[in-house]
Image 1 (cartoon, rainbow, N blue to C red):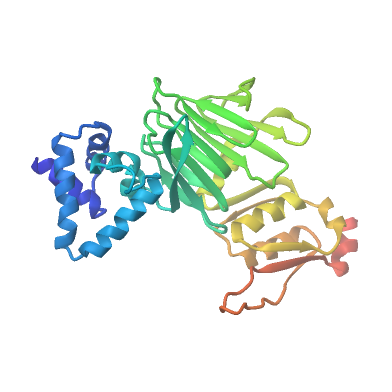
Image 2: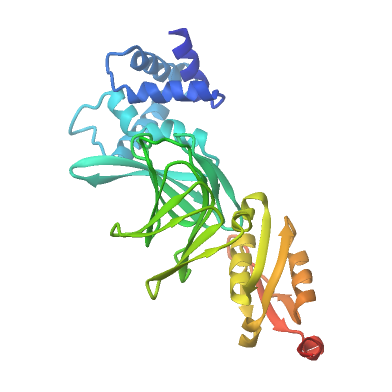
Amino acid sequence: MDKTRRAIRNFIQNRYSRSEFFSVFRGFDKNDEEGSFLKELEIQWDEIDEKGAGALEKERVWKNILQRTGASPGKRTISIWTIAQQAAAMLFIPLLLTSLFYFYSENKDCRHVAYAEIQCPMGVRTKFVLPDGTNGFLNSGSSLKYPVDFVKSRQVSIQGEAYFDVFHDKSHPFTVQTSNLNIEVLGTKFNVTAYEDDLSEQICLNQGSVKVLSKDGKPLSLLKPDQRLILDIENKIYRKEDVVAKNFSSWTEGKLIFRDESMQQVITRLSRWYNVEFELENEELLNYTFRATFVDEPIEEVFKLLAISAPLQFEEQARESKSNDEYQKRKITIKPDLKRLDTFKK
């Protein structure tokens, strides 16, 4: 009992070890209302009063739990164990993940299925760890959704870009869903790019193997390391090519690598990376391609280096503040450098 008590206490105080985390996780998963774990959990709940939370605070927390699990206190009696099962994500997932999150339920076959969603704001990158030990990164403006009962159903959906280092579990395959593709793996490392406003989705394999399928389950390709699959969303066609996979996951190390990428691709990635808006003054600028590597460079340095390789000028527009003293997103205008244009044509 002392070990269980210590694990729960450290868990609540967000200073638990890995073994204590899985001890608490298994406690929820046992589904035994008469077990010692539940009794110890009830003791911890009662001790909230002794720590100064008070009845009003406990009532607020309780109402939030009921609301998020879709339960109604006036319709049926809910034991603390039922709440612990349905709202486990609220208890420990926020402590495990270093990102913005929210939780909700979806009614499926008259059952409430709890989900967790990690959101990565624009201009930052976030590391995540899933309950099965799978870890990875979310890129700027991305989100990752998965069921709270994750160890039994290793299925996630991604909007944006993510890098996965999947924990190997032969009996429980790991599935990544995008808007247009399904990716099945056992244990591997790969990068997925699937932003809603992009014209394509991409999977790039670093290690292991992945099976790529259409949304209706039709097998499309089996990827090997240093291969990339690109899906043309509009035309519903795909191609596979050999690449240097580490270049496509280098963003997890703070690197921006461009390899013969078009101006449009460059400004799209820079916009997400630095959370800025770009405006092209002349469409002829789209004809330029770039090859460069940036490592944790401020955006001003990136502009200087890009201007060396092409006749470009970068001008920042004045930023206006709103009524609440919040400034608008930075806007950068890209213009041709007319004085240097002839030199580059020669």
